[in-house]
Amino acid sequence: MTGKAHVITVSDGVSAGTREDVSGPALQHILRQAGLQVSDPEVVPDTHERITDAIVAAVVAGADLVVTTGGTGLGPRDVTPQATSMLIDYEVPGLSELMRSAGATKTPMAVLSRGVAGVRSHTLILNVPGSMKGATESLEAVMPVLGHAIQLLHGNTRHR
Image (cartoon, rainbow, N blue to C red):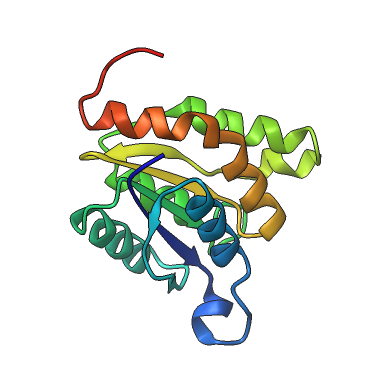
């Protein structure tokens, strides 16, 4: 797979320096192993403005894929799906469904993730849970289709 990826960790604790980011680096590793160029890690607090600013900056910088980790649950500060939904041109619900479905085979808690998947311009945006296990399992569930999705977004519409 070729392309550029950007990972954004959404966490008040990591942003404040009181918690270590383990999910972001794990996601970066998976993406690098797949052949993507991965930008430096980014951490933002759980606020609409900081999340949307980070996603827009990654899109403007030419990312083919943006993966956010964290802020997808039911907590009052879990606003990543709302922030993402405000930005995307359209949803790709099958990716979110696949991530939740794959997670649910391991834990019923996976269905509590509200993560969305969608497109802004030519960039695919995925929200995955904040836990390292939930984040990596979610990303691994969709990895087989991400290369083709990126190609489609760049106009290569040959079917596989």
